[in-house]
Structure formats: C-alpha cells, structure tokens
Length: 427
Image (tube, rainbow, N blue to C red; front, side, top):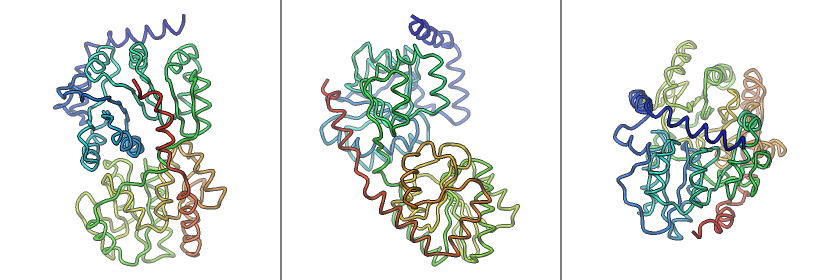
C-alpha cells in the first residue's frame, strides 16, 4: 500500500512541475547543457522513423557507460537487432555520432533520453515500441519502469551499480524499492557487493560480477596525432594523471611533478582533466609553481622545456596511457569512486591510485593482491611513491607487466551477457 502511495506521489509531482519544465529547459540550453535543436527529444518526441525489425533500447548517461556496451551492441547488430542508444549529456551525444560512424551500421540510432515525465514516456514508448530496454549502471526511473512493466517490455539493468549512499536511501523506503526493483527481469551487477545490494532492494534475478568494462580499451587519437605526440616527447619520462576531478587532485598532479622533477630532470607530466573546463584551474596552479605549460585544446605542442601538458580533449586517453611510464587514476583522492583500472593496465602503465576505488573495488583487490598496482593514502604518500619508482625504474616495468598479464587474461563478458539476455530478446 505504501509503495502504491509513493509511486503515486512521484507520478503526480511530475504533473505539478509540468508548467516550469520549459523554464528548466531554457535554463539548461542557456547553460550549454542541452541542444536546443533537439530539445523535443527530451519530451519523448522523435521525427525519426522506427526500424521495422526488433529494436533494443540502450540508455547510458555518460560516455564511459556507453563505451562499455559497444562490444555487446556490435554483437546484437550482427544478429539483426536495431539499437536505439539514448544519452543525456551533450558530450556523450557528440561521441555517439563518432561511435556510430565507426560501427557503420544503419540499424543503430541515437536519441536524447526522455525525461521521466509520464507523458514523455508514453510518447517515447508509443513511437519506438522497444522489444527490450537495457538501462546502464544506475539509471532508475520509476515512471519509465512502471510504464514499461505494464506494457510487458522486458527491463534489464546492465553494469548494475548503486552507491552506498543511494542504497541506504532506498532502504528507508523499502516497500517502494521492492516495488521498483522486482520489475527488472534481469540485473547484471558489476560486482558481488552491488549485486547483494540490488537483491536486498527487491531485485529477484541478479547475476553478480560481470563487467563489460573488462574488455573495452580506452579511446585512442588517430595514428598521425599519436605519432606526433610521441615524436615531441622523444625519450623523456612521462607521468600521467588521468581523469582527475577537483582541486585536491589538481594539487596532487602539480606538486607530484614539482617533487619528482627534483630527481627526474627530464620529466613530463600529462594531465587529463575529467572535464575540459578544468583547464583554467590547472593552468592557474601551474603558474603558481612557474611551470612551463602547454594546453592541447589550444593546439600548443610539447617541446623539451614543457613541464605540464594539459590534455583537455575527449576520446584520446588510450594514447596517453600508451606513452606513459606511471599513471595516477583520478577520482580516487577526490572521493569519486575512481575510474577504470583495466584501461591503463592493458596499455602497460605502472598504476597508482588513491583510497577511494569503490567503483572498481573487485579489480583493485586483484591488482593489489598480485602486487600489480600501488594504492596510496594521501598526496604525501603519492609523492614518495612516484619518486621511489623513478629511482628504481625496474619496478615500473615490473608493475606494468604484472598489471598487463593479469588483466589480459580476463574473459570477454559480452558473449556471457548475450546468453543471459536471449530469453528477453524474443518478444
């Protein structure tokens, strides 16, 4: 009874805020968060024609989530399914276009995700009539889930992940969580911890510990650009800070360079911010320490005097992993849960990360158990670790080889997931 009441309140709230939704969209357009030419997609409408064959809807909020599904999407396309990919951010949308061009298949379509307004859901589902809906990682939309369940459209949560904070919030409304999560016909969680959480929240068919990110390499720049970067670096030592998030990790990157350069004179530090708009903050910090700095988006080239290279571009991280000696993984000092540990391992980096790896705890445990990565507690420890590695370079090679050898043996999970999905793709 309580679940029905809470669902009803959520449903009604959308109608209550309906008059201000246009204002919210206008604000987001002016803030550069929405594409005004495609804003109608956010209310479920599309001028595109639905394909005639079975259509699978895959929703991914971020670019990383989307990239993890590409091997599975390719297999589904080979089996003559049409794929509708929906994303929220403008950044991910621009890269979906690139991904679709590379796949070169007419049966793959991109659309912006509709808001969870009941009417937007009806418009969207009436038009696309998906045979199966696959939500990626942590996309829990109550109105969509309820509406799809009523229509008997199979709902799958893939790469299932829920933060401890969100998990505890759902536990406060256990009757609602049971009502929502039991409507998923299948939940495939990234690891055992997340799988256990989904079961406690009401999911009834949970498969634990299958992670698509285990088989997806990081994105690379084109070969000519990569060769140009390699040529400009020559034989210098390269320290990489990948996907760093905030002032804590900005400070960690710059001070690590300053400290390490006392022992490694030819050091080049490459910083890849999580968001390109962070470049100005990093540049300001570089000026504070009088460091020679180049910014990739300004088309500035590395020379032998360059201390810091700010790679504020998207879709090139794999190339920077490839040319790096030591890599620090962002989001681990800034309490963001960390980023993919397999990508740098596959490119033979010596990997260092901070205390917060909750998004990749299972992989971290494997690497640490096998002495294939180093986990530090704070910035001071990070400085000491980097200096120690550069003073004992055989340990850099040892770490990178161990990480590569371990991760290269991971099974490709796409075929496993496909077998689990098959019963729900027959509609």
